[in-house]
Image (cartoon, rainbow, N blue to C red; front, side, top):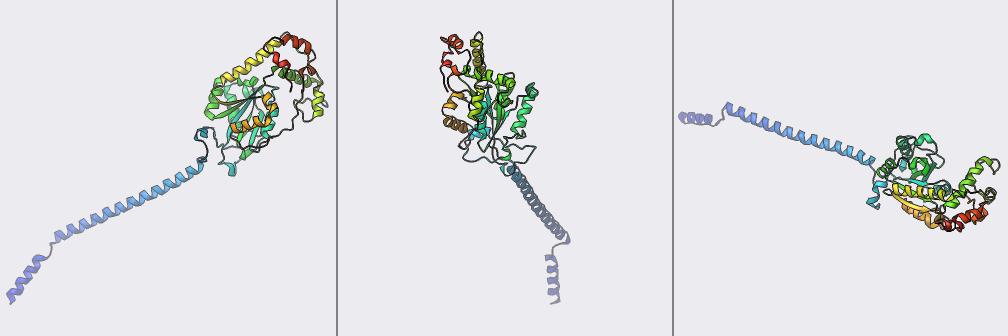
Length: 343
């Protein structure tokens, strides 16, 4: 019996794993646990990085403009989100702004047209910003001025500030516009500036208006003050009493020069997004033409008004001192139709 017990004990001892094998097993278990820990940590780190990335993207998306799904994608290059330095656009920061320029010639109705546009609650047109020569000395000064205007940092009485939907100004052809056409065209196309050409067909009536306005700068017929625009029929009647005498010797050449200047501008800026509005059409049917401009600038339709009153009304024979000479000079020429126009 004792032998059997002894034998059993020996068998029991042979079943127990050796100490070396136990150590290896513990080592393997430790390595497995360590690998699991590293794997779990890497998953956590990835999740943390993803969260941070999502936060960054969230703020980035907040800054990036969100285009209205109804907006024609072809119009996106013309939508801007300025960040002016002089004020905060507040809740209007997400509202797009369109950039425009009214390109015209003096005494072509541009002042009247601009007041009509500025009567729109969402339009800010800042007048003749390139009047001072220092702003148009060279292409660099022009671009610097344009940047300031289109960034909404050009503050005038016409500025609608944060909630403007269209921002622009008036640019006369003799104010550096034709001196740097390549740089300006490139700027307009790169920035998506829409150009409204406001021209006058009847250049003879424009000439009459120019001569009368030049005379009033010295004469100051209205209460000793020179004005280029009036706001009552009485004021218009007073200014229109002056009848300029036109130099018939250079008349055809003068009219041809005005015509050439306008055609040159249209040719230079043909590649820009533009619309051509004629003063005569605007006088004849202002509602129709203004709706065309609002559609061009993608503005909501509004009833646009102006307090300005036209100065020279009626037949040209009433406004030119030497009308008979002018009539004789232009009869039979390409400008003969200018004599009969009455508006």
